[in-house]
Image (cartoon, rainbow, N blue to C red; front, side):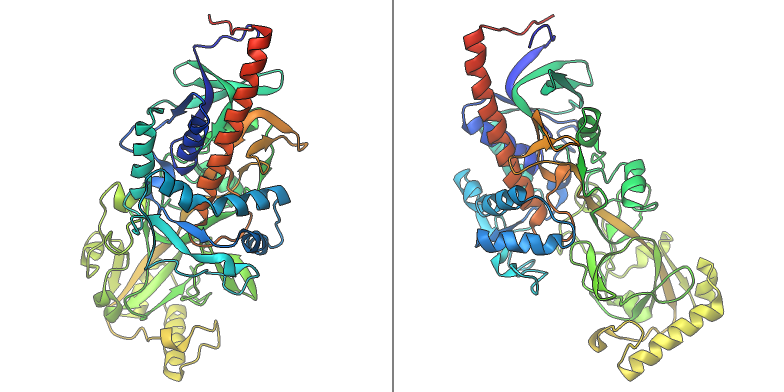
Length: 492
C-alpha cells in the first residue's frame, strides 16, 4: 500500500447489488473473505435490471453442448475460448448454487420452455428456464439474494456511489466513493454496476439509438464502464444490445408493446410503407430478416390498427401476464384493458379514415391508403408476397375507426463493457490483466451477438461467482504476503 491513504479495508469490494454483485459477494464471503457491497441507488430502487427483469436463468443440462451453443450464438463475433468454457461450466451450476442458499428453484412453465434458437448447433443443451418459486419477475430473485446477503452479515451500503478506482503500481487496490471515502480492497474490486442503457450519450455513441426509452433500471448509466476505461480497460462488443417494440409513456422508462390479442395491424415507417414482417419473432433483440439475424427494432415507426384490434385487448401486457419492466413494477403503471385510457391521454390517436389518420402523423394520405389497401388485399389472398408474414397472422385493417400508436425501440439492456477473461479479470487494450479488477453481469456481458431466454441472469450469476472467488483468492494471497512483510496501510 505504501503511503496510499485509506479509510477502511476489506478483502473484496463489490460495486452493485444485482444478481452479479450478490453472487460475487456471497462467493467471496463463502471463502472467508471480508466483503462490502457498494450500491449507488437507495434501498427502494436498487438492484439494477435484475430487480425488474424476468429474473430467470436458463437450465444448462450439458456444459459441452452449451459451449457449442454459445459459439453458435456469437456467430461472426466470437469471444475467447476461456470465457466460453467458464460460461458453459458455471451456468450449469446456477440452480444447484441457489438451492444450496435456500432458494425454492423451479422451472418456468409459461416462458422459455425451449430454446429460441432451436436450429443452432448446441441448442439441445437448453432445458428451459429456472426461476425462484417457479415464477417470473416480481422481484423474486433480487429479494431472495438480498435476504441471503443480510443473513450472512454482508453489508450492503445503499446510496453509496463508487466514483473512481484507486490504483497503485498498475493494480486496482480500492475505490473512492462520491463522498470521498477511500475503501481498500486487498483482493480486488468487482464491478457489477450494470449496463449503460440509461446513459443517453453512450446509447447514441455506441448503439446508434437516438430515441429509445428504457425497459429496465434508470440507474444503468455506465458508471463501471467509465471507471474501468479511466485506468486503461479494453472494451468488447459495445454495439450489442436488446431492443423490443415499446411505447414512450413520458420522459422515463417505457412500456412493452405486445400484440397478442388480435392481428388487425401493420407497421409503417415515416414514409407510410410497410418494411418488415410485423409478426417476426423477436429473439431477445434479433429477428430473422434478409436471410440472417438482424437487430430489431432500431428506429421509431407507427402501428396502424383498426377497431377490432382496439377492442380485442390491451396493447401492453399487465403485471399478471408479464411482471417485467421498471414502468410496470416500480411505477405501478397499468395499460387499460380496452386501450381507452391510452386514447384519452393521446398515446393512441384515432381517425375515421386512413387518409385522416395519415394526416395525424404527417404521412402522405395517398401513400398510407395504398399501403393499407395492399396489405388488406394480401390478407384476402392469404399470402404476403412483400415480407412473408404467415397467413395465420394476417387480418385486415378495415373496420373504422382507425388508430395509430407511435412505436419506439424499447432498450432492454446493453451488452458491451470492459473486456474480461474466463476468470472475470478485466484486461487492458494489450490484453494484459489489470490486477485486482473484476467484472460480472451486464457491465461486461459475455454475449457478443445473439442470446437466448434466461441468458443474462445466468451469465450474471455465473461470472459473479467466478469474480468473487477470484478476488477472495487474491486477498488470501496478499494476506500472507502482508504478514510476511509486516506492511500496514497508511491511514491519514
